Amino acid sequence: MLPEDEKRIMEELSNPSTQRKAFEKVIRQYSEQLYWQVRRIVLTHEDANDVMQNVMMKAWLNLDNFHQASKLSTWLYRIAINESLDFVRHQKTKGMSTSMDTVGSIANTLLADNYFDGDETEAQLQEAIAQLPDVQRTVFQLRYFEDMKYSDMSEILHTSEGALKASYHIAVKKISEFFKQRD
Image (tube, rainbow, N blue to C red; front, top):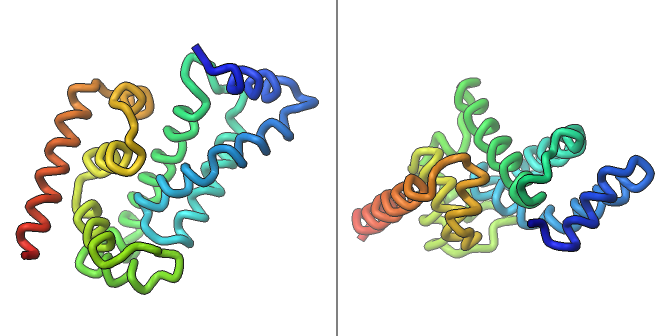
């Protein structure tokens, strides 16, 4: 069952006369949390902004395809994660050097980024996360940074809660090993 305010927004999104204003509400409500999810995957502010434009465009163009069986936030997270992972894969297939390809320089890149507000430990954590396979990286980020429930992740990533728990456990173990090697 959808929360009352989400039902109202969905009704407004379904009505052509209120659709644009309702979508503006969606953007205001979800942009920041989606931005940070995208940013954790693509790492740089500029790339995150590019991906976010694609996310919002894709959401707008596919409003008619949204089936209200899941929450609007779940649907938007799914789009954001898929767009982010597609961006990273596309960069790799084009042979472009991205921060994901040059894992050794991720911490330095983040520390030099004017939009990065973490310290050296946070930059090293991002470096460790970047070394994880896509699924483990995504599961770790959703659980660690967003404190998302496995049931919600299951909806977003279309996989079982057990598989997600295993991925998270393996990711934590790999990140711990990363830091042990640094000591």
